Image (cartoon, rainbow, N blue to C red):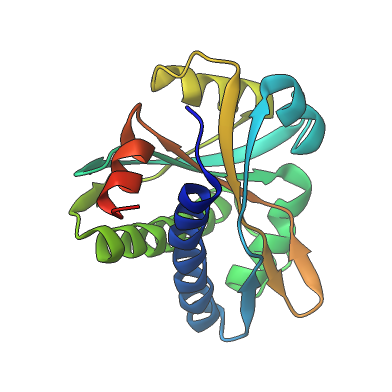
Amino acid sequence: MEYTDIELDAIREIINIGGGNAATSISKLVNQKINMHVPEISFLSYHELYKEIYAEDEEVQATISNFSGDYSGVFLLVIPDKSIKKLVKLLLGEDSASDELEISAISELTNIVTNSFLSAIEGLLNAEIQTSVPRTQEDYFGAIISSSYLALEHYDDQIMIMRNEFIYADEKIDSSLFLIPEQGVLNKMVESLRI
């Protein structure tokens, strides 16, 4: 589906408010200022996605959280292996941790981020949404992204990407948050905004 610039601005505003909420929550958790870039929203083919975001064969950790209710879909927080240690140090204040502690920290971060975004959606759209317990897996980016989209029956070549990056001190955590709505959900959100 094609979206007008006004509709994309509305979707971007929802994501921007959610990102601001998430940054505030993470800042309180780690007791230091966290910023998030204004979200990028783009429509890319799988080829462009693997060229511009992460390579298809890049190893990443992905935390998946389903949401359902008035709107449904999946939040997918993707962190390249090279950024895991930096993220763990931010969250736990330690240079290294056990695999179980790393997964727990990343799951907690995903909970904070997804609930912040969903609170923004609920508030702006007067909706009720519930989330599942996050699950974390390690795999190639291509395998994770394609299975996530296919599970929601997105079969077309053009996929919508929404990205935020965490910035703290002078460090950037290379991570991407994907909102993968079920078919028709974005249209429903735009209609709810009365645009």
